[in-house]
Image (cartoon, rainbow, N blue to C red):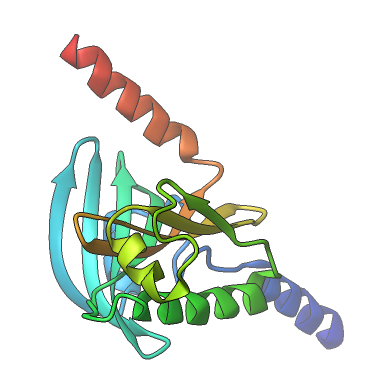
Length: 187
């Protein structure tokens, strides 16, 4: 009997997993605040979303940790690179480090690189410049049972954005509906 109870407890613990860090989709803002140990930065409304932002380190890189809520339900989260590099080719090193970690955790997926302007496409020494100018976009995606994970890197006006975004598959409709309501209200 004790063995059966131990097995049941182990199955229930193993079956319960976090969707991002130590939180699950649909948690309230208060629950996420209670669960998050990183340094709180600020709270900000952004359209139909309420955002919580924290500061932390991920694989020896400074990042913001963001949580997005609609109707007080966690629907999306991300890591956003805080660091900036004078040598813009260094963004590729960070992207590769994050990509390898995500591949190890979720399985290998194909890198999707899209050139929007091919001026520097033949010169790998200029890829960082091309990235910062918005000439290329790099992306990898993982489709998990509850979550869509996307690692992305893009630039504009010599500023690079590197982000890992996690989105709830089940609650994705809340974002779509909220954005549609904003558009409808503007008409």
